[in-house]
Image 1: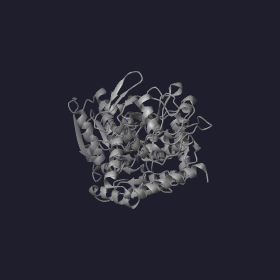
Image 2: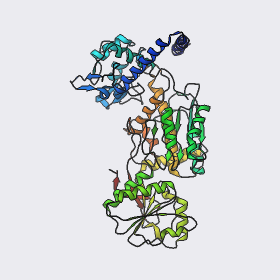
Image 3: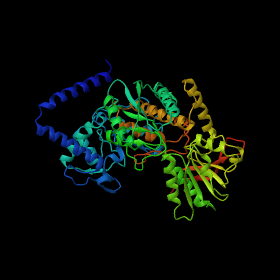
Image 4: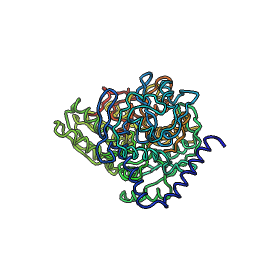
Length: 565
């Protein structure tokens, strides 16, 4: 038996004995133990001492912190797995404090660095990761005096804390539980994830998204283009939401009770997603980059999105019109709930700006009615999907009288909108993408080959294919990074908070010549993306684009990229 297997066996036996012993404890003892862990949780997350007073800490340079600003979570993160601040010689490692790492000896791998942590100096890893195990006494010394279990000073940002004995015991009790067990969905011999398909999703796009994700889940975990040895199988479940939106919450809970999942990966919906986000916050299940037209107004901790959706396009248009004020009326034509919300948002933004607006409903039975009365000085904004635009173009022998036509790239794929040549000079697309670089062109060609190799048909919206690919890739890479990190420390059970933090890092990092991580992100139809502890929307800006010529499908930017205020 390997050393690792022996350690896991010992831990398993210890937990089993503890479980057997718990019923023998008196109710008061069990309650006190629970209360102690809860007090430690509040100290770690909120900076509140066991007696209810704010936690006080002093930085080495003399800066005094209190309450939430002094809380451990600020640097060590919710998972307790720490982070890296800065790069190169200025990099500072915030070491893990999760129980399985903190209360075990940390080993020092023979290879200090690899693709996962090349930005951390050797000396940082050497000082932080080769040490004996902590216990409550050693933790007290670290917190009060700033010295590790080898008597060496901790990194400079580490504050000195003022803790009473009860608070120290509470923090120790909580840290022993932090990261000690795998989260539901990853606590067996495989990792269970789900793809949520909302009832209003396009069937073709839903099928493509499902096929792309299934291909990813069969792909060995890799990071920087290399497999990492993470071999735990990933099983994909499809959760299809049907019927009235009011019933979706129950459908999600029923599916979760049948099989708890570790995360929702990707997902597809149009105007309705709030019940899914509410479920994720309630169950603490990560929702990794679903493709939705409308993101809930208030995003929680567990849901990550590519963008705010069509409302961001409306904000981009509002700023564009503020700088390029139309002479006539901004006539908005919408088709469904997504388009109606976008049109309403733009109208509200333009109120009081001196620009007249008008909203009209597109009806397939009489498509040209929405064009009645549009004058030559007006601006036409079409919140329509590709099939509606095609129907409108087929019914009109000439372009509408409007000075310019603006189309939503989220609702209508620019490359698939086949309109008459007479339209194209006046057409503009509001898009969250930018002019396609050579890197993006290569990446998207590589995606097409990957889909072909996996037997996935290139059908549906190319943006949604790319969305599913990026979501699957990032989840896969997060598992890979966690595997790579385990060469430097005791392995820990897979937790949702740890994966969320790895996803934040993966999305936010930029290529630096030694990491291939960005190559797969270049397929995304968005500009620069970043995520963080308090940032759950990756893209906040976009561009106004036009065809480079009436006969070309290539889009070029009009003016500068716009990041709405």
